[in-house]
Image 1 (cartoon, rainbow, N blue to C red):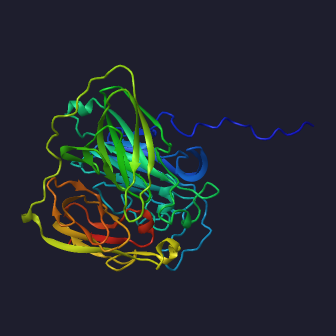
Image 2: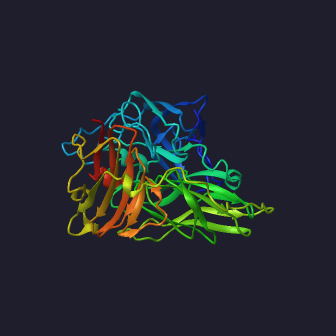
Image 3: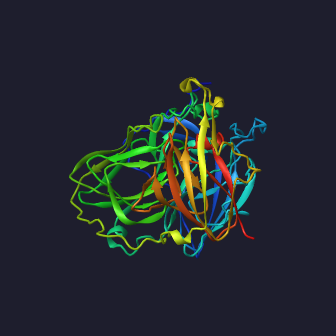
Length: 476
């Protein structure tokens, strides 16, 4: 018998500079997007590393789902992750049982109950579950996304790359300059792993500076090709598990036309864009002179250093493709909330406790609180009557960290930041609340759906460790 030659040695793929690859696209047919999703472990080659991570469909990121307002999303989700090795802890703010999952349609204005966008569901290993989410006919068109939201393991799963884009089609269809632009779906992420190329312990994600490098669609520094003068529409999805990114495209403007799936009144031409976990930004990029430009995250202090480094290389070459940016945007899809609409107000306070020497602390010495309380799924924290329109003030008294406030089901219109009235009155579902007494004031309509849903910090380490509350919208 001859010697065993061992495994086949395959060439190592280049760590960087490959063309940007976008996730698989699945589309609705006759008013229904019917599909399947499997949650399972998979090897992922990212940035020259071979990682073994939880995934959707065994891919670096989940498929992009494209549907229209008024349509229904039907998913048969199979949880193929292995059984748990740890029992349910008495204190559920201790991250636990990383293989339970569920499905959240982030930003959708839809029912939070039953088998719709219900993040109280527990989808256990080895079982199949049906999800059915119907959007109203007047739903805003734009860029949304999906990810797990099972308390205990959502942070680990999202840090592994379990998320995907949802495009609700139809926005800017009547703006020829935008309709002509090539679209690119780009899920921005922080890549994190342990010595074995896995995430099997919460200490892999905490401390807050645990990120190894940044990626787009599971690729480290991919190449985006453009022609001089070309305009592209980048649908940016903030699928990073924890930290803000201060985005810049070298020698180019970032022309924002929508935030969090909701079109703006006027295009914003920015040199840099602060991009928080959970947020989305639709930007138009017009290529300049031939050359190579870096799309990157710049240094930013959010109480701890935000991750920095290249996200992509933009290579501008070839024959010019003269295109234009829109001179104006259409009327925005949502009406401003006027003073006379308001029926109530409330204030929420974000805070935290930490050990005396922050950098030396173990994650179990920290807690993240709203109104002085840790998350308890059996407690209703905010009761809101259906049909009301409220003004909320979110205050962050935490000395160390900015936080990212997110609420499910109903978007909100930001009116003040740190006491300064906002002229543009942008609609959002996720917003940064600065540390040391920073505040955000917003208004929201609770008109269409009853049920229980969540508000929380979308820095997922913080949510997992207690910074979440339940909201119940009720009808008398």
